[in-house]
Image (cartoon, rainbow, N blue to C red; front, side, top):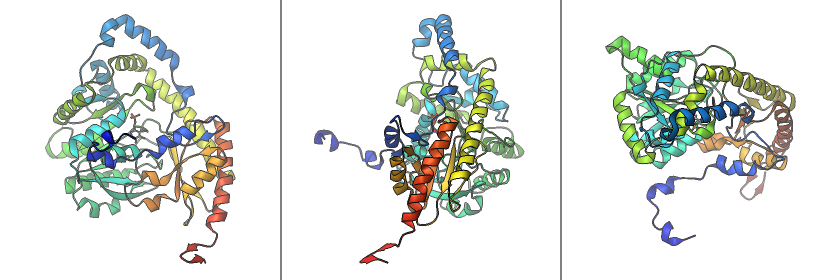
Length: 421
Ligand SMILES: Cc1ncc(COP(=O)(O)O)c(C=O)c1O
């Protein structure tokens, strides 16, 4: 490695670790491997033909303008469409509250840039989305972690961390990545109440909200917060910044997502985005608008829900059939993931190696923890959206072989200093 560059890297690069998931995705590309690793949508559901038609239409109707630089805020018709669609979920934003970003990952980076000074505390769920931990770490965030259970964030354990004045809370209320759990209605109200009491704002990351396979839609935090504000001092978007994306409903390769925030926050984010990439790809925005319009997106999301619901059910059934009784897992009502918990004393990082030998992959749980890494070692994240049902079944069978073997060896006598016990 060239020392010329190494000695010049900025301090913030010391905080960046390579992503286990990205590394893992390389291994899992071998053809015989069944991967439950990445958070990939099913390629079979990408609306390829509709995209093809939309590309033609965009070039025909907009010509060179589709290939030109454009506004940092985003393509106006797309912003308006997003605002209109969100209104159905009670999010009463105007186009001016919507900033188009190059994926939600960019939104997280911009939010980190906007809010985090080195050493600032950021409250996250344990476990939480790895990409957010990475994005916020670059800016020197110190994480305060609050555990989750089947009803999402343990709001009963929140106050001691809020007293430490985190800059903001980063919350995944729907079908959380990695655990697949959903924040219950009662806890949503409790969270908004506590956010208000301690004056701590919330970043609500909601890539999966539309991918619900059972039960009723729950009000987003941004809506509950607005109701809170309306009661007090008239309508305005307040203490919650909301993020969502087209990655899971249309296609991740177009890198299109959005932030909903009060206008002054949007203005600041626009400046930061300008410095980062000037604007999100004009052509992609126009094509996405053309693809999504006239109700196509709604129809398409219905189809995706059917496909993913079936895959989730196949995975749950296979787990029930093949896995030993001492292993448990979540029953997600939507999204792309479920979360497996192994008994005490097991280590999913070792299990991961054994699983690769059986040609099946998952993500070991320790990657998803801001702190308390040891706690993650008993968990694995399984993705059920990407593989076809028969492969899901076969993959879980293979994984069960590795799990049973690991349970036998990890229950062996403990290693202690000076020999075995
Ligand atoms: C919770 C969460 N936030 C953000 C992202 C990033 O999404 P995007 O593809 O829009 O960058 C993901 C992707 O898996 C995610 O799970």
